[in-house]
Image (cartoon, rainbow, N blue to C red; front, side, top):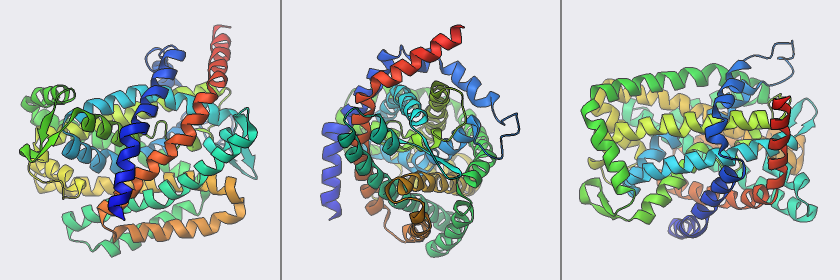
Length: 451
């Protein structure tokens, strides 16, 4: 069964999804005049000038910074740790180059997703919801087709991120805790489930507050330790970068010559794991970007691009370089859980302290991702069934967290890859067909900026 799922997943990634993501990213990059280069500075300004809403509305609304924190909470997880290791193990160092390309082009895509999410968001009771299900059902010219795509997407994201994705996160944590501290996976699962339940019980308001407190700290700590490791092994940085660029365009051997790597495989793995990390084009981050209180949709689009820079260009690159400068990827084989490779890199650089540090930080990375992904699923559960279905969904997510800790990593990663690929398709159709809406909003914002 798993082999069949893997075959279907690889077929979709090799023959469709990789090209769809490159096309939509390039399309919006050109159509909008390279906003990831020309407007990125404004994105950082919008994100960090608005850390707190100033006029007393903070109790009722979510700021751009809080929405960014929720987005980063969901983006920065095991994809940045084990996903990058997996890309290098199977795709070789060249996969990292294609991860960068997916990130750069993905900024154009994530901008469009955020603009549409802001434009078509809905308020249901005290909560604001938005995302592909909402903009597909309301923004498409063919409403019937749009609602079909919306329903398909909503079902996929609930399963992909809310259930299977959270199993991936809890599995990585339990593996790290087991190998780093000898803690039984089921015990890790029970504790994680309790911690997740406490936060998701408070809805998006509690999730956003926790995210804005934890996410900046964990990002700064990871970057700081990464810089220390790279400074310690600075002589290996240039060879590592050289291996990334040379193997991106030529067949190389990975894992000490154990397997041959084609350029096509490097491209697929780089873009695939880049997507799992930054989520651009997958339709995940629009759920977070929809909830921000901004006076124009484009402003949140600019902020959304910042998340890709932090997630892919900074965090994932640090992970990749640590693996490459320590040669951790040559010490283990492809049957190992990818998280073990990253742990090996930290161990080679910092000894047992490095292993313990990564285990603790991974706990926070994956934990914040789980509460972020929970909310993405909730937004779509509400779209499909209304608010009455939220409590059963909460229970299902908590059970999935426990179950993920005792499931073989290969099974859930394979299922996750397939579901991620399927999610891209309805979202891609929508953001391509609604490109004029994005462009018009962008032109409108630019004209307002000139006044």
